[in-house]
Amino acid sequence: MKIISHRGASAYAPENTLKAFSLAVEMGSRDFEFDVHQTKDGILAVHHGFDLKHTAGKKAKIAGLTYAELKKYNIAAHFKRDPGFQRVPRLEEVMDVIEPAARWLNLEIKNDGNVYPGIEEKVLAFLGSKPGLFEKTIVSSFDHGTLKRLRELSPEVRLAYLGHGLNAMLLLPALKKARAVGAVNFHMSLRIAFNLNVKKIKKAGFRVCIYTVNKKEDAQRMKEIGADGIFTNHPDILGKWTLKG
Ligand code: G3P
Ligand code: CA
Image 1 (cartoon, rainbow, N blue to C red):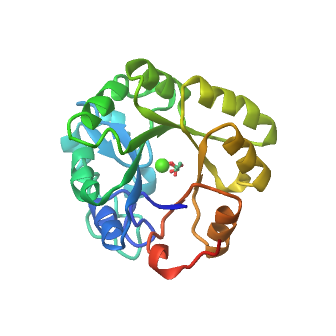
Image 2 (cartoon, helix red, strand yellow):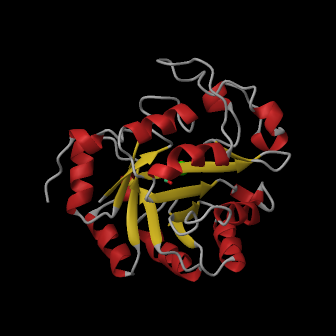
């Protein structure tokens, strides 16, 4: 089971910052997840929210800022233990830190309602710009239109369906949608990661990764029910926890 660092070592450093990614590498991560947005002037930038409320405490939207404007905000302001200045990194800066250590990368495109027109082309061009990067990256999005456009643009790109607000009733339609875009992975929340659901998804031919798993007992349960990976804010569990099975 893959132990995937979620937004870097985000339990120990402000999420999605170069500091969090460097720390994840130091902790031994080889599998990484991060979130990608696009600025007003077309720069791919790594941050979780569409605006800076949760991180910098400001309502400014990434879509409305140039990168020169965006990089002035302190996105560590929310992180009480270490609130010293950290900026939103560009995608290529994050890649410079993690790619040499990475065997698997999950690039999540945040693009609800196509707020960043053209982001799919930009991401695909970026993945093709460095040898080996395309092959070890899987692209996910909660926005189904984004997955569909990616598939239209590239028959080869590996896609992960991201299940949102799923329940037992919605699982079958979700599997259909995942199949329709040719996804190879199915990523879903720990809240609905029960044995039966995971078995159904695996039987349908997908690899299953679960977010966000920060407790040893949950990690152990995910391993027992056959999850292929867990996203965690504590990538140091690699060295600390021995999971049975
Ligand atoms: O990609 C897994 C997980 O990160 C999706 O949820 O809200 O943490 O981006 P979120
Ligand atoms: Ca994410």
